[in-house]
Image (cartoon, rainbow, N blue to C red; front, side, top):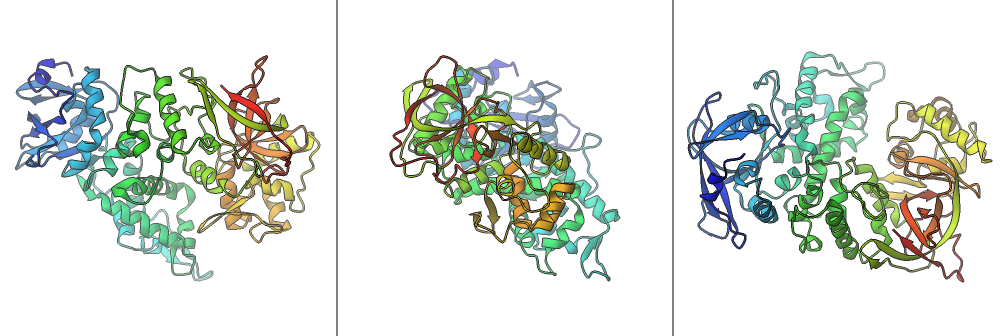
Length: 587
């Protein structure tokens, strides 16, 4: 958009809380979109109601034009389609759209408008969430929200077309080739595959407005439908009685059910942040929860969260002239201060990045990954351990690039397995064989016939998943597999042979983790970035140990690699009462 005179006619001074709003004229699909632009004061109690649009920008290529104040304005393909579908054929629609209502070539204006974007969405009458439309045709024959509406109506899986009860087993089965069943799931795939679920800015755009309408092509539904779907579906999946869905869900199959599992995970995360609900309690929790979101400008991984990140982020102001490293370091310092400088802030992924010249202890927020396992596991299990024993400690600033801590070196990485796992790997047998071989090549025997107590606990991080959260494994815990189940699991790589709670715990523990063996013969799991020679440290004040990399000839300076589970170290056995610790400097 290069027509600067349009913006000059409606200036937005930084000392005001004003915005530009489009008034889209009535029209029918396929005709030119025409609109006028006016200025609106957000502080005016008599301001007219307005709508907002939440969508993905897509490739920054101008493909079509609309008319604004009788002047042509270039817009991208996805926005053009959204405008074609959203406008009414009968009456004007007043709507705020970031790409058009903000002068994207003016960094000063952009920074000011971004800083008040939370207010823009909080005060709007409703937000239109545009998920897109089929490339083949803007008309979708089957309702893409039918599956969502099914579960929102508190219906069971076995109420779906194609389900029948097996007369032999008495269990629910499903004909996944049933015409109605297939059409419902394929239509929902259009919703699930929308890039909207992965864009950073769409988080606040979805959680701040009082009302949201979700649109795919010509189909619409309320956001409350997704909320109800997530709640009722989860309730049903947790019920393993014969007449509910815990078992009947499995008849759908993993590959068919995964898109809905994924979308409902996104909905649950948004629900925890929406409407002031009790959910994420800190800036760091929020940023970690939405690490899977993407954006063109890496600074927006921080700026897109400021509107609902609480008091810790209140002093941060969008500034697109700052280096990415400065934006990330400043934000992460706020997160650490919010958490009283606890080493707990160093949990999770994204550390030890070599992008943007970041210190190793600053999370690289530009990294995109699905954090649902990592966040729940790292934070939920943290209080079950006490690697530092009774030793207290906090992190301290030394300068803009370094952190001081006290700790104790307890071991060193001797060998690292070849394979990195995922939560549900296709090559599980190959991974288990590689991990077992890594142990045995380094003097750690792993039993395949009887349950191996050490290996079994390492795989689940010594924690199982319960309805109320995580639980520390006890000796001969009921959730552990028996010898027969263990033998099938290791011998065939068949996770279904394991008890359900233990199987789920393994899936969340080994996700994006690699096994390693230490010089003392201990076995652990950590991030894929570890290498032979890395050190395992108990950092005072931290419930879990960390992998650190000593800098050559740098004395106490280390790079943070990441937190770790190391069997035999998690409960303070390595830290004595007389251990005063040594100084550490994280760079």
